[in-house]
Image 1: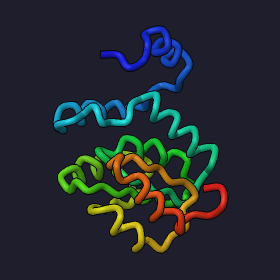
Image 2: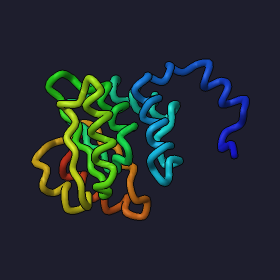
Image 3: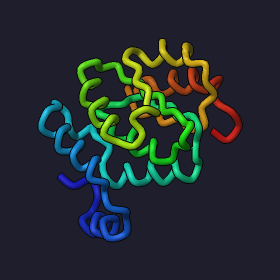
Length: 156
């Protein structure tokens, strides 16, 4: 089932950066080992996240909803050498896959994993974030936003 037209998909493929090998490997691993692989951030969406992060050049990123780590790896591409990406996921069973691929990347020591309810974890983070990506339980988006706003500055 196509969610975008074949013509648009062809255009995107012709005009997007190639998917890095590490992300190709993570996509394969997710499809082999995880029950709902369709929840994975895809190649084109990932390249957009990477581009936005590189434009913003954040020092601190917060991601709510790690899944297997694809979007975190894309967002980390814009981090400076002293930057950190904090990523939160409720599913502890995915932590090993995430960590494996984070550690294979150039950003492994900059990605901090949190497991649990984001609504409980966010208030405990004493950080002002430059970039926030919310991609978790859709029905909770308004609550996530309320929790992260005090952790932002103008322009986040």
